[in-house]
Each structure stands twice: as structure tokens, then as C-alpha cells.
Image (cartoon, rainbow, N blue to C red; front, side, top):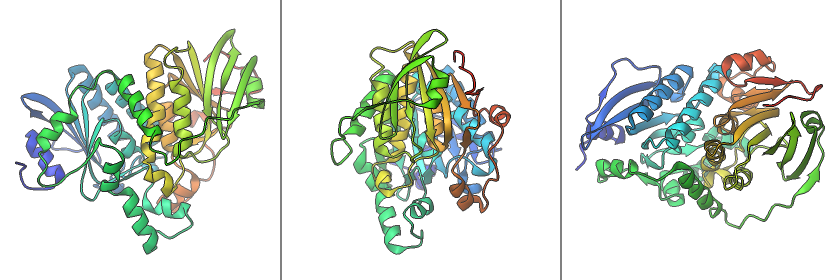
Length: 416
């Protein structure tokens, strides 16, 4: 039987948790045990700024995951968070990139990870939740890449509109999430949390195989089977500068092909066309990446000109987070197979789309003038009440850990 209390309290009591007295912002770390085995615990709670994860929280949580990887100890992470802390700007984005990279590496090394969710689980927090193979939802959890206010703005409605609120509640509800994925469980007072944790921590086999299975399951989530890509050969001025020669094909903002630079051939794929990223295009990019895994190329470059994910209720009904996280899983699997993977930002990039693609790669390059941001200006203004004035200089990106190398397209770039 469970002890009394909500899911957070029950979790801590089941694990016999001993938490650090001093939290790091919204994060508190601790440890407990299950069946005599040490369990590392991380609580991301809504103390201030909607429970957002800033640079401090990201660094401490990444350190915990590294310790768990060394110990091979399981991790229980409780998330009640709106995602990355927008007010910290690039510092938060760079720290979240490093955190998500550590989370992918922990999954690759076999760290058992269980995600337990509080009231809110938006944006980057929802991506962290999907690093875990199993998630335990509270009865009132809302999980999505975008919160209701941003979804309403995207639909041209008010977040107070009763019809929209009802639609959003139905789409984002725990019961809806549980129907979409058997790995999502809704907590109730009768649920044995100890038994749930044992299942969540159970061995899953190697990560690339498990991630590929998840990708294939996502493909079946669309109401209609996605059509086979209708590729068209294209020429691009930026590719003329990057490659000595190349062949590129594009379909609906998805690009793929091969190019030569520095005397070597590399495969490439990416997102172009500036349209916000929905579930179908995210799945299509992941599919293009997974097709390389059976015969991994020596080098693969990802190109990105996509500022954000799509704030659409139809995409959130499919659990957009899973599709965005799936791109990162495919890239991490390629990197683990020995492919040297890089990311080049051709124009705009930001948010969870940026994190999913930047976290698994060896280096991020930005074309001179590239615009990397936590969220698009309209979303930042909606959250903070003010818009950003200008595009940061590249040195700001480097200092924040958002990009590692600048490419000036007046010259043919060297090897990545």
C-alpha cells in the first residue's frame, strides 16, 4: 500500500528519501533506496519562475546524471516545470543543451531513469521526461512542448476562451497521454508506486534499439499513413559556399543529400524553409536519420533553419515532444555508431528543436548572422512582457555554449 499524500510525497516515502537541505534554485537533489539499491533523486519544483530550469539547475542535474552513470544507479526525476528559464536567455539555452546531452549519454550507458510529473511539464521539461522510458503522471499533469497560452495565441484565440480551454484540457490531459502511449501511467492513490518504479527501472536493452522502436511506434500515431517523400533536386547558395560539390534534394522543408568538403564526403540532412516544426516533419527527419544507422556514414552534417516548434493543438494531440525528442535519439544513435555528427545553423534556431539537434552532436557551427534564441520573440514577449532588441554576436553564442564555430560563407569552410 502507498503512504498518504500526492505523488511527490508518495515517491519520497517509498524511496526513504534523504534530500539535501539547500536547494539549487528550483532543483533539490537527494538519494533513497529501492530493494536495497541506491536511487538518485532529483526534484524540479515550482518554487519560482514557474519551476523553470536555469543554468544552475541544469548544471547540478547534469552532474547528478554523470554520477549515476558512473555508479550505474537508477535516477528518479520529479518534474513540475515550465521548461528552460527564458529570462536567462542564451545562458539557459546553452546549459540545457549540455544537460540534454548528458541525459542522452546516461540513457546510452544504461542508466535506469524514471520520470514522475507534477502539475506542469512544458518545453524542455517535457523533453527531459521523455528521456525516461516510463512516465508517471499526476492526475492534473499537463505535458506539452507549448503551454496553453502559447497554443491559444498560435490559434488566434484567448487562453481564457472556454471552448479552447476545454479542447486544450482534453488534448493535454494525463488520460489523453496515457491513451497515446502505454509508457505513460496516471497515478492514483491505489497505484503501487514501488512496483511502478521497479518496472520503470527494469533493463530495456541497448538504447539505440529501444529508441528506434519508439520511432517506429510514433509513425503509427498519425491518422493517415504519411506519404512517401516526393523529393526534388535543389541548388542552394549557402551549400555552394560550404561544399566543393554536392547533391541535395528537398521535400516540404526537409533536406538531405551528400557533399564534399575538405577532400572528404559527408552525408547531410536537415530542416529548412523557416516553417515551425510539427510532428510530421520531425518524424520525417528522424526517419531520414535512422536510415543511416544500419550503414553509418563516417560524417553526417545536420542543417537547421527553423526557429521553433509549431504551437498547434493538432500536433500536441500527438504528443509533439516525443517527435522532437525522437530526432535527438536518432542522432545520438548515429554518434554512438561512430559517425562524426555536426550541426550547422543556416538561419534561425531555438527552443526544443535546437536542443534536440544540438545536444547529440560533436560541434555546432553557425553561419555568420545566424539567429539562435531560447524562444521566438513573440513567445518571449508573451512570457516576459518584453521583446529582444537585436541578434546576439557570435561570441555571445560561444560564451553561452550555444555554438562552437562561426562559418563565414564568403569562404569555403574547412572540415568540421
